[in-house]
Image 1: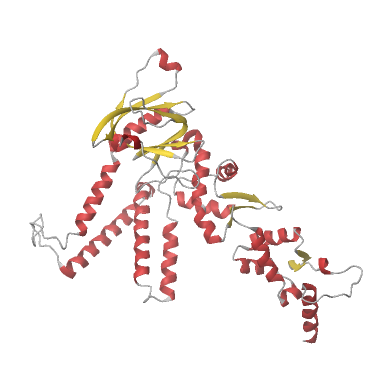
Image 2: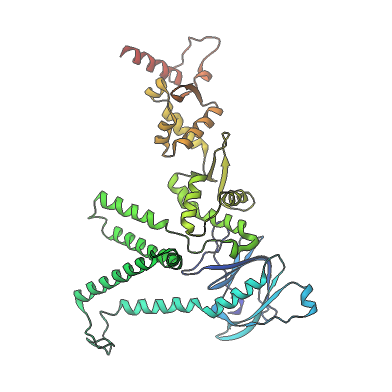
Length: 439
C-alpha cells in the first residue's frame, strides 16, 4: 500500500541505522527534509539526518527515535537539477522518481530531498548516482540464488543428469560432498593469499575478509551447538577463543570524515556507543578508555581515528540518548561504563573481600581486588580509592605500596573504647588478631 511508503527503518540504541548484509554507508547530511506532494499519505519528514548507503536512503528524525528508508531498488530515475538564479539562493534540492506499490499496481511518484544544513550536496548527488548505477542489491540477490542452487547441486535431478554443463562427470554422494568442501576451502585459501599480498590488496579485500570471518564464526557456533555433548573443555575453549578473534576482525562500514562530513564526530559517537556494548558485557560493565581505543581502531582496520577524536566522541554521549557514558575518577583515569553499572554492587564485593580473616589482618592490594572483581589492577585501585572516599576503607601507604583495610572507626565507641558488640566487623577483627597471635 502507498500508505506504508517509505517503510520504517530499524535503529540501534544509539540512533544509528541497522545495516542489512553487505550494506555500506557512503554519505551523511544534516538538516534534510523529504517531501512528496504526489502521495497524500507521505509523512511529514522535516529537519532530519539523511544517510546514503549502497542499498537505501535512510532518513532519521532529530527529535524522535524514528527513521524511514527509501530502497534504491525502488528508484526509477534521478532527475537533473535545473540551474537558475533562484536556485543559487535557495536550499539545494535533489529530486528522484520512485515506484510505489498501491492496490496491487505500481505508481510513480517524485520525492524531493531538501538540504537545508551545511554539507557538500554535490558529493551526495554524485554518490547517489554512483550507488544507483552500481545496483549492489542485485548482486546480493544473485549471490543468494547461486548459493541456493549450489546447495541443491549434488542432489539435483535436473536434465544434466550425471554430466555438468561443461561435459564433466558430476561428483555425487559422499565423494561429491567431500570434493565440494575441498573446493570451498581452496577458494578460501586463495582469497586469503590474495588479500595478504600487499596493503592495497588487503584494503580491497577487507570487506570480503570480514564477511568470511562472520561465516566462519557462524559455522563454529553451529558446530559447537551440534557437538556440545562430545567436545571436551579444551576444544570448547579453543573455539571460544577463535570466535573472539573473528568478532574483532572489523566493522564493515566505519564512519569516516569523507562520508559523514560535518557530522563526523556525532556519527562516530553513535557508532562507538553501539560498538562498546560487547566489550562492556565481557568486562563486567566498565572498561578503560585506552582499551576501547585499541579495540575500536583494530575493528576499523585502515580507517584509524586519533585519541582526540575518540575523546570527543565519548564526550558527545552526554548530549545523545545512549546506554553508555564516560567517567573520570578523581585521579584522572577515564573509563567507559554502562549507565546500568552500579558502584554499590562493586562496594559490596570489596567489603566481602576486606572482611575475610586474612584481609582483616594484612589488608588487600589492588592486585587482590583485581582478581576478585575480574578487572585490571589499575581500575581496581580506582575502585578501592573511591571506596575509601566513601568511608568504607582505610588506606596504609608503605614502601610495598598501598594496602586497604576495612574502616573500623564507625564501630568504635569513643566513650568506651573497650566496648565490643557481638557480630560486628570490629569483633571479627579482634578474633582474627587473637587467632594470629596464637599461631
